[in-house]
Length: 242
Ligand code: PXP
Image (cartoon, rainbow, N blue to C red; front, side, top):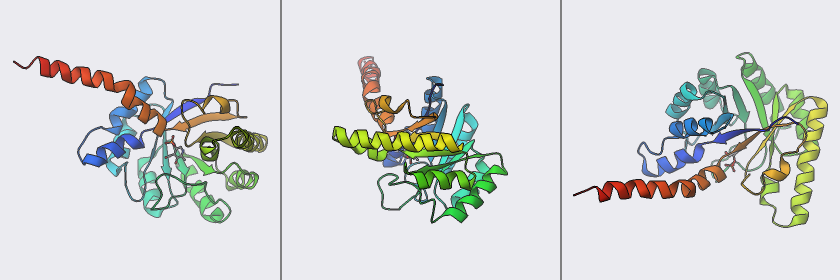
């Protein structure tokens, strides 16, 4: 089994910045730190409502990311145009609803099949990998392969949200089953959504798993792992006053 790679989703650094409307914290600086500490790449979601990551962020990120730059995007003409100018290493197509708190559910590959096929060929002509964020269901995996996409990203949300052991086990089986179909038919496997410091380890042996996209839990944890230093630094400034 080869090493599973981590792509850190830095959207919520931008969420915090947007709360004040200034320049900090800067997701670009965050991306640099993530890569310096072992992340194989950086993921951001340029949403149509621009609630966190902004257009200037993605172009600034393109200049600093050394590993894989994975841009999550909806089936939106406006974002497709930006992505073509940006040239990330990979796009991940996700469903997007305006009122949602975060991405809910996987892409409906069947309904959007023709459009997805067109987008796959547009990005392939620019040498950009295409991943489809889907539920761990056989039909979605098969259609993803048929569309020509390079990767599926299996939606781990139901597994992560499950509270009782029985449901957790069932959701894990669904993920492993979908991943094994994908490896059998020759489409590469990523996974993500809701993964944290407890539920990540049990899914690392998923067949063919290459990359995990993890955001919220890492950014949340960094507040507490970084808070002690942040307070100490301010205390030093205050105590040097006089
Ligand atoms: N993968 C996809 C396709 C997503 O939309 C998101 C959330 O933006 C993630 C992974 C990361 O999820 P989380 O922030 O819960 O780790």
